[in-house]
Image 1 (cartoon, rainbow, N blue to C red):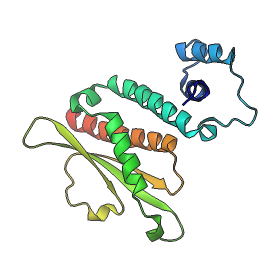
Image 2: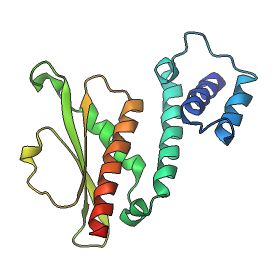
Image 3: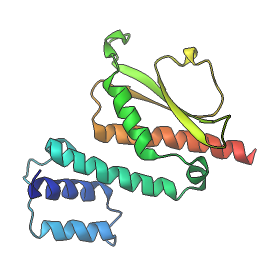
Image 4: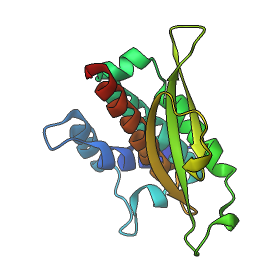
Length: 176
């Protein structure tokens, strides 16, 4: 990994994750642009080298975790977004899309957060495929789907969507 990989990853990350011209991230992006000029063919994450993608994903995970940590439900459940994300990546890498019907290369994925009976902690599991085969319906669920062309960047969004679904169900359960 060289400096170019680091600068390029930060450029792509800050371009995607700044929160407006007054933000710290935008100031950092402007500073980078004082010494780095991306190619006119640069298309963000998909243009990055493998090393730059690793840096980008690491930065994006930290930012996403920081956003989730602001939510009381997330703190109560004691979950680790990074673990959920990497579990989804590992699950995705093992999926077989050849069994998909109707030429739609899409598989449903679900995140279930549940109370551990032996402790006061919460655990999670990822499930995929037809939800009719889920036998344990307890806990808080988030739902999404993946296709056969997901990148780690898009899986980051899917992991966030799954976790947000669980947190919304947890919130609903605690106020009822």
